[in-house]
Image 1 (tube, rainbow, N blue to C red):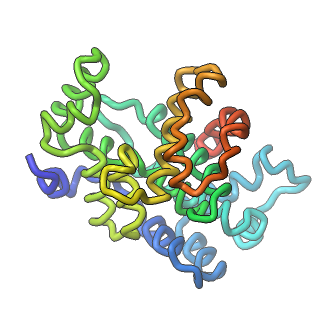
Image 2 (tube, one colour; image 1 turned 30 degrees about the vertical axis):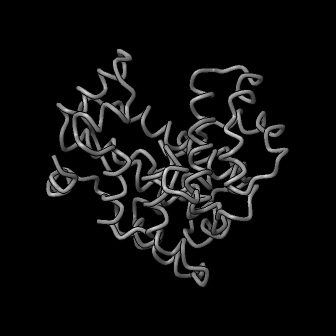
Length: 275
């Protein structure tokens, strides 16, 4: 099987709104204007309603109801607006997937995104917005596989669940490529910035191709902490197993390990607001 065999099934691909693709491209443009982003939001009714919902939620605790999208976007701020639009666009890109529980899938993705953003804010080598975005889409290849080749996807899932093979080996044996390779190909098809696709493809093994990419390293660390949270690992064990070489390559300070308790309490609050 080739990755292109999956991508050719255009009727089954995730339906990500144009506004999300445009915003992802804007994230990599240091000259992007707030007005450009807010204008795109106002032209998409679904996104605009979600923006209003979040601003009027208990999360913000405002004393009055906000009904103007312009005022709502100002209150959110450009960073949170980008985060909300991207997260909302992807979480609503697919209605149902055979063999995959979408609520769990997106909750996992949101948590990885928030953890990646947490790490990115502590290194000068990675932009926080890019880290959040790549966290949201880090597992998009697995979603693609379940949409376009559900039988093979569930066979891989069975091998992993029964501990007969790790996911990477199971995918390579049955497909000839990994879901990270497929994710990068899908992002290239959507014309996402090349750096985001590279991080998705290489975050599992950031040292495999020589000099490690800081964004790939941040995503690797986010996935590590997410696994620790998911399995309720004791904080001492989290620090013991922490990949220090990856953290160093990401440009993080040596003392980052002593801040991990703050990261471990991150939950998918944004996921809760979006649904």
